Image 1 (cartoon, helix red, strand yellow):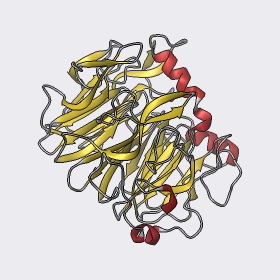
Image 2 (cartoon, one colour):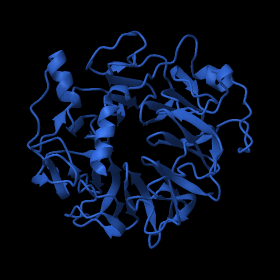
Image 3 (tube, helix red, strand yellow):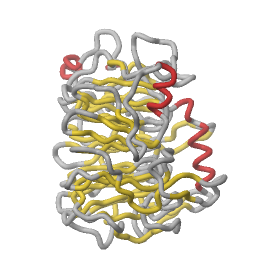
Image 4 (tube, helix red, strand yellow):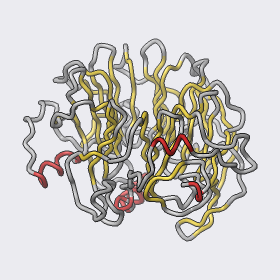
Amino acid sequence: MWRGRLLGLLAVVAVLASSLAIGGQQSTSKVAAQEQPELSAFTQTDALTDVVAIAAGDDHALALRSDGTVWAWGGNDAGQLGVVTTELCRADDEDRPCSTRALQVDGLDRVATIAAGTRFSLALREDGTVWGWGENSAGQLGPEAGESCGPQRVPFAVAPRQVPDLNQVTMIAAGPSHVLALRADGTVWAWGDNSYEQLGLDTVDERVGLTQVPELSEIEAIATGWIHSAALGRDGSVWAWGLTIGEKMTPGRCHPPDFPGDAPCSPRPLRMDGFDGITHLSVGYLDGFAFGEDGRVWTWGGKAWTATVIVNLISLPPPLPNGAQELPPIQGAADVVSGFVHWVILMADGTLWGWGNSPTVPRMIPAEPEPRPNLPPTPLDGWQDVVQVSVGNGFDLVLLGDGTVWGTGTNSLGQLADGTTDRRRPAVRVGAPADED
């Protein structure tokens, strides 16, 4: 199963870099001035406004509004929108369930945060309980999902269901098919797919039921990547596990099922010594980033920065003993969001920088319409007051401080919720009709 998913993901590497440009006269002032358009009959609001958090899955997306409600759009072939839809979108030479408009997820209120996996969704409510819906083929929703769909009878749940035996949760993180939850007591709990030992349980057995991750206590934050995970201790320590690309940080090699050969990995949480004063983490497809209180940023895992160094001959400090590489000084970097072949830096002042490339999609830098590989971080002109960026499969979403969401990239399943399935560049407002872009 996972080999097929892996090959499928590798096959779309060429189309994963999205274009994060605001074109022409568009600006945050225009966003605030737009009229509120009418959405489909499924919704009870005139536009997707007052958004406080976003989460992009593989081909669907979620938004959390300030009133604690959750809204979803995009692909819906496994119930990942939490709503039964009748709309069909043509993608991959077949008609697939979708919604090109943002729809409210039924039965959820008082939600504190959200997360999205490949074809499933999660919500953490204010009472510390976790709710999930969508695909459950790897137990990513917990041990029970009452329906099945498709010719292979994939288990799924359309309506949100509470993950049993889990409470007092303060943070959730979703990988493609695995989940981490951080409880108030500082312990970390995991469930879902474990083919690449991304649950940190020292086994490749698929764990459907809830399991505490060993060796972790006094944890402050968690993060999940494609097939790896990480945690930040309250003392500033950094822990990582699962499949990685960094040879130096891994104590052994994993032998995932249906995977050609072996791969460097850590089957249990590994403390990455050598960091100093880490305040938060960000984990992407195959890499991780650690942010120091003094503004320094380190990365480990994937080849993102290595390729940049080779092409641009940038001089960098020697890597740490754990294999992590310090990036050149980027004053004010608050977060890094990692896709397969592009990276976006969210600055503390609300502006964006980016680097990366795609051979088939114009680069995200508006001044460079032609693809060019592996540039160092470059400002993305036009973006201001950005509070969050979330990357899907070929599309990017940007949340602004005024509570509006903008998106760019592939839209074949309505991933940008503009009422069309047209690919978009420059960015369009999510939830607004196409004629108001």
